[in-house]
Length: 435
Image (cartoon, rainbow, N blue to C red; front, side, top):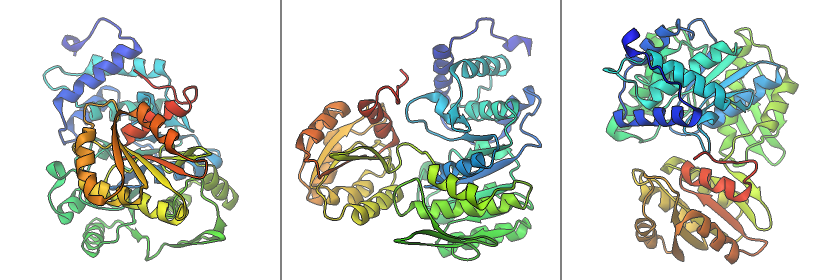
């Protein structure tokens, strides 16, 4: 290993730049490089307590609800998610606090010492190894790991969790995961482990049957929203009916009716964890659901006019946002500021969002993958909403505010990169971005 040692120590900025340089190696599926990296650290991920979450949408929200509940129960809870909104260190949190820059720099420098130059890891493999080393060293009682893409060959699949979760399935990343729902479901089902409970919110019969058959083969208990787990939403609150718990009139700290499904999944995981030695009281559950914090997802960041930020970065998320806007802002004038990544299904995203706008401003965040506003406006024109282009995001937000009356709603959406760049515009002190 001495041939691979790097003498110089990188600063935080240099270290993160080094990690991003690994993106040139693209997306390569497989667990061997992550395994090799962790072996060099003494396999710190083994015999630890994990919840593993895959799915097209809702992964981060389920993780946030779950972390909030068990933090209320007095546990030290690690959460690994991607992408970040503002700072690289957001990807690694313990009890809501992101990893310090110093810790990140130290970990990246340590990783560089064990990387074999002939077989460099991808960016995601390196960050996943960082997360697992970090949670082990910090002695997290429970770590919640969000799958990056797919499941079967995702770097996070090196863990052996207490509970596996697949939130839902829709067409995504078809260049990598397959062109049909069945193929994508097969990749997601790759996180199912022998004897480990699987919980899913999937609705499509062919997807549900795929998961059920894999669970049967692996003797993994199968739990599904709509079967053993049920919930409903009424004017008096969110009501949950699980395998053992019956809880009524709960309040959720995240806006949007669609968050009820994510909360129900988090509660079902909590029930399962309770049977595995992680006690939590009903009061801690209530408080955890209410106090959850997950920026950039139906986040109201300003009032008069009300300004709402939501990533809505794929068709499923855009549809959920559209439903929430129709339910909550039916008689309000809506101004939409939208920036989407070029590699997304732009037309399908715009189809759900643009018709709800009384005025639409097409823009782009400062990110190399962002679609040109001209393309967005050309695609959006067929949905018959009044619109204009403002090439940069901050001027687009200025323009939206100049058009808005106090009773209006401004919705900033289309990508987590758009939302992440918008946050410091509204609160530069709280949301200080990284270069």
